[in-house]
Length: 384
Image 1 (cartoon, rainbow, N blue to C red):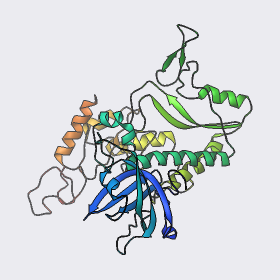
Image 2: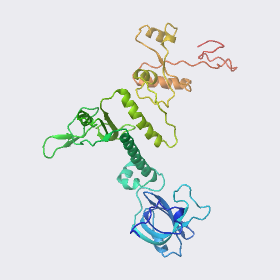
Image 3: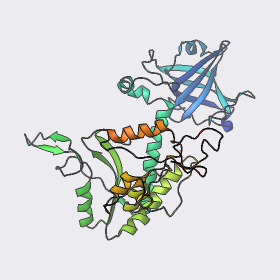
Image 4: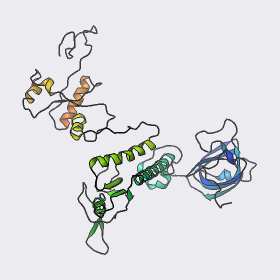
C-alpha cells in the first residue's frame, strides 16, 4: 500500500464497503461521543468521517489529536449506521473504522480559524494566508477561478485561437495608469516597466501573421483598487484577431462569454443569444453610463417637451435654449419630502444647483377623506 494513502478523503464510496483503506489529511473537526471519537478528515478532494473507539489500538493516539493536525490512518470502510448518512458529502454513505493512526504533523492553537466562516481582521488573514486558504469558502473560490480559466482556454482554442505568452519585463507603453518600474541590474540607472496590458506584443503577433491570439494576461497598473480589481495587479482574457470587422468580434466572443457564465451560473439565468446591443448614445441617455447594470430598473427619459412653454418657469426658461434638455429619473418609492430633500442635497454636493422633483398622480388626501395636502396633482382638485 502507498506510504500515505490508497484513496483521497473525497474518494470513498459505498462500493468500497468492506475494503481496507489508508487516508492522509487534516483533522477538520473532532467530536467525542461518549468515548467514541469521530474525526472529519479533510484534504483537497473532500472529507471522510473516521471513527475510533476505545477497542481500537489507535485510540490512545487519536485522543491526542487536535484540530488541523495532519494524520495518516488505516482502517476498514463500513456503511454509516442508518439515519446518520450525510447527503451533503460525496463520502456521506460511508465511514472508516480506524485501526492504525500516525501523526504526520502536530499543530499548535491556530491564530485564525479554519472551521466555520468566522471573519478575522484582514492583516491576520494575510499574515497566515496558508491557514486562511484552508477555509472551505476560500478553497472553493480558488478552485472556481481555476475552472473558469480552464473553461475560457478550452472555448478560445475551440474557436481557433492560440495562446501566446508575452514578456513581463518590457519597455513602458502609454496606458491608462502609471507603470510599475523594475530596476535593471545589467544596465544601472535604467528600468523595465511591468506591462499594463500586452497591447504592443499582441499587435506584433498579428503583424507577424499569427491571426488569432489570446492570453490570460497579467496586467500591472499603479492605481487605486476598484470594486472588481485588485490594486496594482489583475488578470484579463486578452484577445486579438486579424482581418475582421466588429461583427466578427461580437459573434466570436459572445458564445465564449455566455458559455462560461452558463457553466458557472449555478442555476441562475443567463441572457440567451443574441445579446441585446445598446448604442453608446442610447446607453448614456437611458442609464447615464456606457456600461449600465441592466438589473437596475431605473431608466431615464427625456421630458423636455412636457415642460417647454409650461408654467414651470425654471425648466421653461432653460429650454428656450435648444441645446438644453430636461431628463427625468423615476423614483417610484421615493415620494416623501425627506427623500427629495436628500436627493437635492446630494446634487448640490456634486456641484449642481439642485434637483427638481414632481410628485406623481395618485389618490390625494381629499379622496381619502382627509384634508388636502396641496402638493399632489389629482383628478379631484387638480392642484399642485
